[in-house]
Image (tube, rainbow over all chains, first blue to last red; front, top):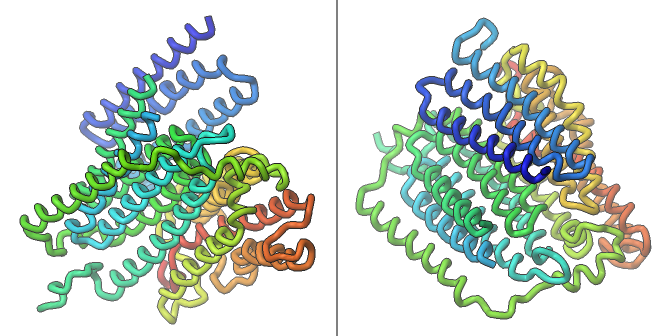
Length: 93
Length: 105
Length: 311
């Protein structure tokens, strides 16, 4: 049952990674590319982590969760910085 | 041991690519990048040799692995100096180039 | 299944490596090089070299990548002004490169059948040092002299980079503020991430005695956090003439040397540890080294000092 859950979740995460990468390569401008990238960061990585967590002890699972949260933090902020520098927001310089 | 063989081939391919880039790319920064790529290919060969020496319950011989760690650090130090020189050259001459033809009017 | 993964990784490494060589735009080449470093660290995991993988991701990809990004940003526009070699040279270079690659690849099939290994002797004596990580054992016990000199190389590199400063800029502030710009989001990151990063750096150094990790990987995380704080302008950048900064730079090598010389007194040899005290001494050394490595890496990436008015 756990194995089944892992396979489903990790596969879904992998599909999201594939879709996101395609978007990153094919979308026309920086903002839409960022949009594709953030979906991969949030949901794709989240699904992979969620799928792997039941396979591990609580400490390793907590480490994986911490990795996901850190990627959330840095991903959100890097996206903000990139987005602002593209749209020429008032704080970009 | 297929992994070891494959990564050996990857390492030698990377060395070849880096040698090509080192000769063909005219800009010093590109040459520096190629040099780093060359170094990483050589380190990968080291890693495969370490993997071949797997024994005593370890996945690889720790001695070449430790050598590679030292190597990566020294390569970084050399890169830092090279980048420093390059930027100083750029600051002085306005262009970072090692072509002698550039000096001609 | 695993062979399929290794094959895909090999092809990806060659493809991405080749792309970074052939990319027209220098910034593109550098960013692809960073991605290449991360892929390479995956390959290191596959050949059971976790310590090397961490070092490659941190130094080979992260720190080197950052140096290159800064350099590409500053000199990127030069690319159009250089003289490109002729087609004949391209062909010749291709032949030479192919010969080199094929020659080295062929060596895989003529390597001696019975591989030599020092893994056995290392594991036999590892217990004496109290360490659990064989790579840390090799770095700090068997090859302590090399590791000491490696730290000195870092120090020399820093002196080399600093000596490239213009005379009038000496004693100034390292070049951090060149890419400093006020940005509230960056400030948020620089305030929220470092506490986590510092804990992680200490953990990595501490855990390095028994599992993959160590002073170098921890020091790089430390350097990353320091750079983030400086770039966001949350803290003032210290002058290169600041005594505290210089103390942090030499702390690691000095502690290393002091323990090395103490070896003359106790077991009677340079860099030898007294019986039973190897692990505590190595941990003390690693802590000092982490601090020094973090500061030196940060300063190497920042570049030589700039004058007051350079901002």
